[in-house]
Length: 127
Image (cartoon, rainbow, N blue to C red):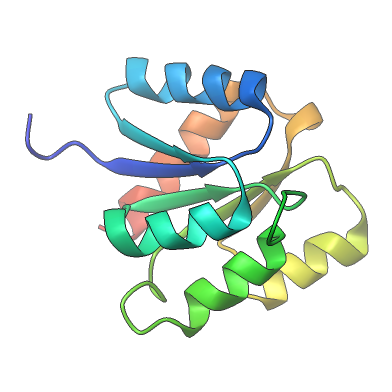
């Protein structure tokens, strides 16, 4: 199936990365994972994903830095980005939105299925 949507999952916790990766693969998506912010940015450029799920607290570069870099990149700037994190503070949410995140989820508050549904919605909007 050539029209599989590609998701870049930037998550440094292996267990969480594996859980989401499995969930999205079962839903028919192609998933590429990055373990830190620097790798996430490099993979965003090389893989050109349809959507990026981005953790905020990661080694090397945090998610805010990665998001800012993506929004400043001519090729990547229109790629939808959903922040998927454990930072639930209002300030963090505001900062994420200001930097151009399409949405913001606190991992503990949402099931993987809810995240899948959100990804489908965002991808549908972006055609």
